[in-house]
Length: 139
Length: 114
Image (tube, rainbow over all chains, first blue to last red; front, side, top):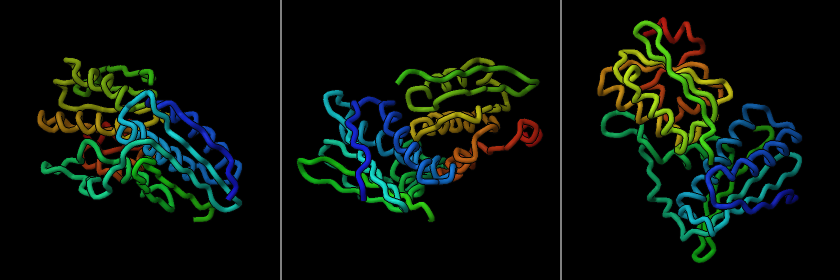
């Protein structure tokens, strides 16, 4: 897969918009439908917010790395932080509280995994966390 | 992130309307929370959330809306929403927010169902 964009974003909420705009531009050129582009925007935003908040813990001296790669049939986005890693088992699976209401937080990974075709998470000691999201043009 | 949001409140009979335009995030959610805690809104039996179709909502913004829904339930308020794009209607359904804030495609439908 051809690498198209590699960015380093400041670890500040809102900085993800630059990367999202670039990925959306590529997705549009590839022919993704608008509803899939909206899914991509939300998935990328949630991955970046998680990286800034949970991975890099709002440390403004750190960066969030974004790689966007594409070929004729698929678009891949990797979001990379420098954090110590999150235990996937600790990500809440239950989204309804005791009172029957949706829980306040913990939707990032849930949304990402439901909005893209493929999703994986990798944590390497000393190398941070990588969230990989893949969207297929015809799925 | 700057508070890229415009929130206005108004009243139509016994319905308090909160009009939201811009980014609904953890940061800007405070602005919506403040509008909800406005005396007129917090005492109204019915609340209508009017979203602009270009509103962007992330998980932090969803948390702010869940807070309002939770507080509204304690006060036996009915909260309806309309104006969301198809994408954010889908997100509301995915996270279960429509169980506490039903969404409608038009203002008329949202008001008629109170």
